[in-house]
Image (tube, rainbow, N blue to C red; front, side, top):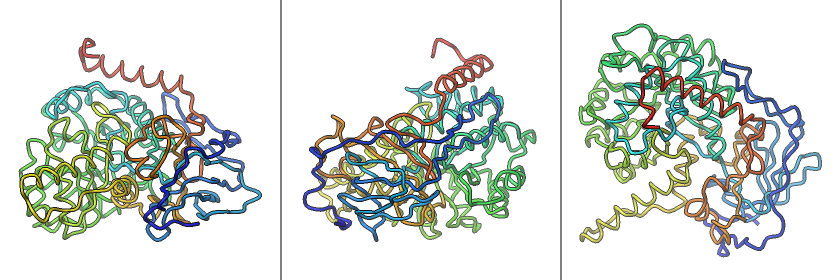
Length: 495
């Protein structure tokens, strides 16, 4: 029986359910994940060509029209979801049992600097100033194309492993066109659904990249559109990772992005220029449109916020890193007050974890604490506190919307791409499950991510990545890290 968008009163009491997540679906001819030091052919984890039936799971569609199901099936034909309902009969389908699992859309990250995958946790205690000095000022300029490939590849595979099926690669490592090509190739080889945000280079002090023509930014976006992104109907699509200033650079590059049909994603309201009024100046020039995602926004002024809301812009919050590194207080309530429902993002793996369980809990706790504190101070007419359902939507459909992909992913809606994750409910950290949405947001972690499908292809099964040579991935990551650190003269004592 279909449940409404409010889950049934029993709230999915499933701890004693019979059965377990089934054995792996057979993957015929699963290819290696393109893990060569040089770009390789794209990964293909094709199944036998038969439909896939995810059977008997607790299904959170995140589609408000369809609702959720205490027990239902999901039928996948090719790359798309064909049906979501109880009791689907598909005799020819390969079956994935979800008896002890929650089935939901994959998480959607709207902002991650994936070239930094080989620099994970290298700056665990760093501030935003430390990041600019050590990561973009010292290590970034030392990257060669093969290092970009390794960083993007390990970051993309890591995203899949924790249930992130779509990620916007906010790529600002384009020291040369060869760096750019390596970044795109790694995304394609990984099998992740990605929006490639083509951004500026890392050229070292004084890093006035707009005065240096070696990297060809932003003009090289024309070549990228023709060479890699001639169609928007593919797994990896194109955006501009833009800048809000210098003003003339912003205006010309944003115009160029729109000329080639690329969305724009831009950091605003952080760092030394956080209160510069750059967004307001762009708004007054008519540059702000609904095709733009604004990242962070911690220090924007009220006029800028109003402009973003009125032009239909979307927001990407990285609440954990914003607090850890000193960007400013994440502007969750400011956005909600203006009717902007944010998306979520990891930002930098140099300093924060790559999973979305952390991101959801951070935003939930921050907003609710803000409301409680205001109430304790005597304020009346307080805003509503967020619920677990809200942040689950931020992590899925709102992310898809900010990435311009809400017509393709973000909900389990028939006709959309089959980007689906199965989260185990028979683990000690979550059983017994009394509320499915609550279980995902409040109790689960990366160890609950059992199965991941992207465009109908099985990328992870029974807790293990499919078709990935982990020894080779590890070697690529370590070798690239060592090369970059050595070239940059980065003190080994810090590692």
